[in-house]
Image (cartoon, rainbow, N blue to C red; front, side, top):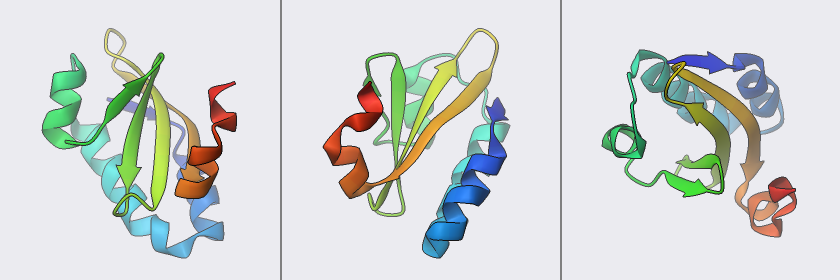
Length: 95
């Protein structure tokens, strides 16, 4: 899968340093993946969920949430948001 955009991970990790290693692990796994469906995603990330057209990944013991749009046809994963659990719970990202 092609991950767009890695700089979002680095930017988020500047504010939340403990997120860097878990996010880079997510990045490495995702980059090597060949997902064709949510079932494939869940084989790598068991707690991934679909919310509308977005896929939500729990990061670092559910402390953070990575929200992405996964295009299975083009093999691209677009990072839309990386949020703390509190920010995610507010729901502003759904707009």
